[in-house]
Length: 335
Image (cartoon, rainbow, N blue to C red):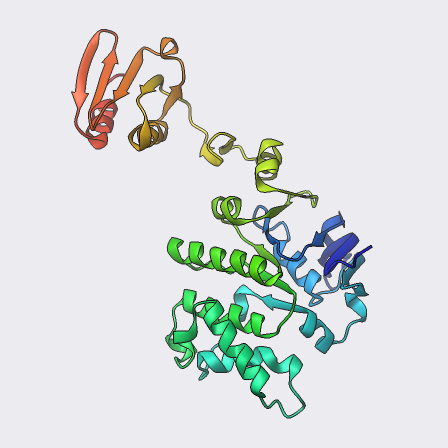
């Protein structure tokens, strides 16, 4: 049997509170990370995603069970052994002070350097490679204090790569990034996992991006249970809906997204094709209509044809020349 880079058995994670019993956030976890897979850890706020990340890295002691890295129990590994096996990027670990990008990334070579800390040719080659690998070569000589959040995250990921570990654990690396930077970062990490045979686990609240990017999801629920699997399979099995169950939103398995609960003011049938129909349906749902598939179920019918919205309601017909005009007419009517 091959040795997994990271594997847990009956793992129980949580944290200790002085003078009280330890607080368990998840238990009975039998998990593994596979080389080349990009895994996203998802769950509601406060369920313990950060606690799990810290425990898997050996930064925080587990409350029970075991964590093995390349066959070795993480609790028996020295700090240097952990640093050579697992690299970690935490949201609260962004550097401050008078460092440039190159100096921060060079810190990742510490587990491999001699006691003097000097960088050899191999170290410098690795640093140059990781900077280019994450698209941060142009940031090498800029001060960290001058960089944007997205640029600093690139430097921190480059530092983690400089450690030359097979396992990378990242806690909410996209938390403070705008949408284009989040997409770019997720794509970079996914590509690195596949190209370099890395095990990458990333916690995130961005369900849509995780569904589009991850090879596998870990869904951590409020009751401390964790489900794993391919994103599409977990969606079809209802596990995503169950993990994020709420009185405010419903999971739409066809759209692959959540939608807010609304008391529909009326049913509407929307005919047509393409992007105009899709966004028309979204706008109607947003203002309180229930879009139905059968025209006979609704007295209100809208046909979307080449930038024209033809509306029919109980014998009354009118046309709108834009989606905004349609919405304004419906909001101002008794339809």
